[in-house]
Amino acid sequence: MFTFETQHAIGKLGEHLIRRHYESLKNDEGGNRFICRDAKFDEQMKGADLFIINDELGTRYVEVKTDTKMNDTDNFALEIMIVQDDGTKKIGAVMKTFPDYLFYWQHPTALVYWWKPEDLVPHILEWLSQDAYLIVRSENKNFFSRTLLVPKDVMMKTGVVNEMMVSYHVLEDTLANETKV
Image (tube, rainbow, N blue to C red):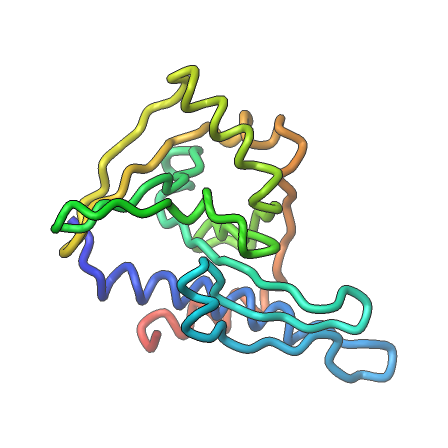
């Protein structure tokens, strides 16, 4: 069973990685290409972790997920539902379409996957209706989540999942902060 504190710290680590990645990108004059801030409370309730601003792209909300088991399983763990101890059910992170992008970090590597949630949701619904992949129950202190395990090759074949590598400087900085976050 995961504790909220452990999961929160892992999530913050992934947010740190994405934030540092975008803050490290410079324009031709050496200035920052992107400005990042934490999502406000109401934005967080809609599924965003970070708000990113760029002159070329405008403003974007992003959700960040950190997967510490993907190296072993070769699966994406897609949280489709959260069930609170009192029985209240909420939509899982990958089903929320408020964020413009979902970043999925394969901890502790430099590899990050990303997609537009609205583009992946139809695939998730199809997989669920076909009962195509295993759904696991992940226990936490005050809730449990239902998580769909989808093989990496299947996710990549959707054509909506992209890969990016963060710099090793950003990765090392993030991993050095692992015990601090």
